[in-house]
Amino acid sequence: MPKLDAAKRFKAEILNVSSYAALADLLVEACAAMGCSWFALSHHIDFLAGPEKGVRVHNYPEEWARWFDEQGLGVNDPVHRASQRRAAGFLWHEIPSFSRPRRGDRAILARARHHGIYDGLTIPTHIPGEAHGSVSFAWARGSPATPEALMFAQSIGAFVFEAARQLSGRGAANDSPRLTDRQIECLLWAARGKSDSVIAQIMNLRTDTVSEHLRNARSRYDARSRISLAIRALFDGTICFGDIAKG
Amino acid sequence: MPKLDAAKRFKAEILNVSSYAALADLLVEACAAMGCSWFALSHHIDFLAGPEKGVRVHNYPEEWARWFDEQGLGVNDPVHRASQRRAAGFLWHEIPSFSRPRRGDRAILARARHHGIYDGLTIPTHIPGEAHGSVSFAWARGSPATPEALMFAQSIGAFVFEAARQLSGRGAANDSPRLTDRQIECLLWAARGKSDSVIAQIMNLRTDTVSEHLRNARSRYDARSRISLAIRALFDGTICFGDIAKG
DNA sequence: CCCGCCATACCAAGAAAGGGGGGTGTTTTA
DNA sequence: TAAAACACCCCCCTTTCTTGGTATGGCGGG
Image (cartoon, rainbow over all chains, first blue to last red; front, side, top):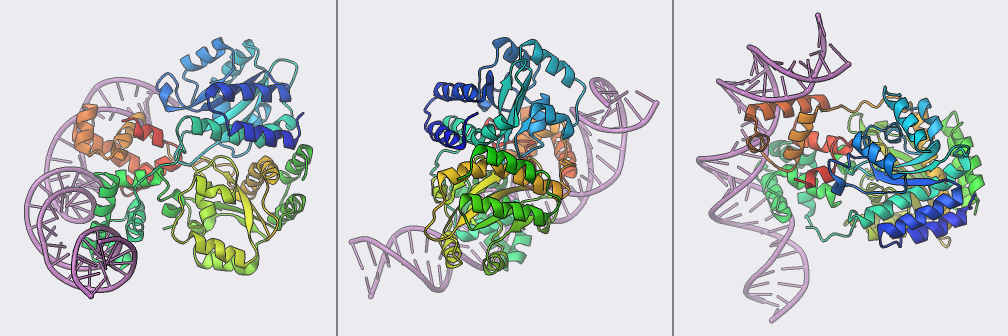
């Protein structure tokens, strides 16, 4: 099993990859280091519905991937479901202890075994406002996923996901509009669902002034509605979920 | 710097803690292993529960923590803001490369230095629909946070978060509302800034039907305005930015 | 020093949209 | 068989958006 400084070198290489192919190569190396056969880095979405919406890099058997897509498992797969209930990585055989099973789960796992996939581990990766995702490693029959492998995967998984996110164009630097302090303040109250008049009371202003600030903010973002404004500002980081919740 | 199997042992101990005090003790050990002075584990952002529901375990200087609270920085702090835009851990000095700075940031960092806190790293931890949070480690003057420490922190951070989550009694319920397909479809158009009548045209429905879907969706999220609805659904992963962008 | 530029704050009125309430009925699903 | 999801309809009031303005203070460039 690789050491922590191996993970560090790995991380440095991962963050420098310039293509999905290079990323896949590195993940194959990671598999070799952990003694597993397959990796899968994926957003949890229905790929047949919108392959352009998310990232997926894997070296699973083709047939398994195809069946997976055909069944629309991107969002229903028990492993993906489990990963949406955890912050930390987990071994697949731990899943029953924290995620409620569904009817079709056993059939899915049986199908996976049919393709040689017997055990594995998954590192969930979530970013507010983005599609759920995970990085998984899978083992063939006879070689179970170990806690050691989990620790290694945990140390590199999130970086793998970040790298893929960069490649997909998310998280890239943006030159988005800048709002003034007052505009942001008004926007935050608006994002909390307050009306202009209520915001005016809170901020000790006239209603029209609040409308004015939001109007200017909208025009900077070229947003016709306050909802677009809020979402775009949220997307580019001008405001964040924490700001809004804290009202 | 500790090795990966140290992280594994650490993980096992962390998941067995039975009190916040025990958790704090373990985090002090982690600090010792990494050569840092302080740790801070915090949950933030809970749209449904009150802002005071979060977990906070830290050993920061009392005065710094008090000032931090008095300023209500739980959400404006640049480190917390940055942690909402990343899946992977980061060193504090990397923040400018992916999170937009705000006016007060420099003052906050200066204040932290005034209390001895010069550098650090943070592991973000997000679970869809739940309180998101982070685990941070901070260094005094002269000893910068290193990539090695980041790897170690990354390997244990999520487990620390899970432990705190169990202690806080949150492990069980994922009470985020579920929307029907039509509700989500309407919500996505609304989030793109479309009015009910325009949505009705697009979806080939009556305007009232669209209003009805959005009304039901609002009631499920206990949101009084469509903007709150959109943001909460965005936060818990029912919709994501990618969905909205693909219009 | 004046000038333009911007942020800030205020005013007004009409059209469009959202939100809350009351209903009806079919189809799908648990 | 009961509970949903889905589609449709009505009324009434509030809020938002848009379009015109006015006026102040700060700041940097010519």
